[in-house]
Image (cartoon, rainbow, N blue to C red; front, side, top):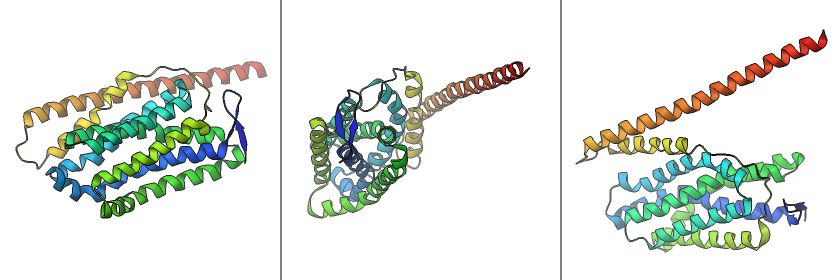
Length: 279
C-alpha cells in the first residue's frame, strides 16, 4: 500500500486518505439531490406547499454556492485535518437538527448548516487530491473522484426512495448522520492528515456578504404567483439584493482590470528589458 508524507513529515496511507475523503464527500453530495423524492412526504407532514418545501433544496444550493468562494481561503489558512473534521461536525450537527426538528423553519436551519459544510468541502477536496497525487496518476485519481461525485448525485433520489419506502423522512437523515459520524471517526483516528501547505491570506468579507444578494433575488422571484404577498417588503428586498450584486460585480471587475493592467505592464517591461539586453 503506497505511503505518503504529510506536512509534519509523518507517513500516511494515501489510499485510506482518499477513501475517507471521498466517503465524506459522496455522502454530502447525495444529500443535495435526495430530498426531491421526499417532497410529497414533507408537504403532507408540514402542511406546506411545494413552493415552500423546495427551499430545502434551492436554499441548500444557494448557500453552498455562496460558501464555495470561502473554501480556498480556509484551505490556505487552516490545517486540513481540523478543517475537514470541522466540516463533518457542522454537517452532522445540521443533520441532527433536521432529525429533531418539529417545524419546517428549524429544518431549514439544519439544511443551511449542511450547505455550509458542503460548500467548503467540494472545492477543497479536488485541490487536496491534486496536491497529494503524483502527476502521472492525477488523471486516474480525478477520474475516480469525478465518477464518485457524479454517481452520488444520480444515486440521491434512488437512496431516498428506498429509505422512504421503509422509514419516515427522518430516517433518510439518520442514514446520512450515521455515515458522516463514521467518516468523522475514521478521519480523527489518523486516516486524514495535514497535507496542504499553509499560505496565510486575507478574506474579502464584504464581497462574501454582498454575494447573498443572489438569495434575496431568488426569494422574491419565488414569491411571484403566491397569494397574500407583501410586495412592499419584497420590493425592498429586491432593490437591496440588486444593489448588493451590482456592487459586488463592480468590486470584482475592478480587481480583474487591475490584474489585467499589471499583467500588461509586466509584459511591456519584460519586452523592453529583452530588447535592452539583446542590444
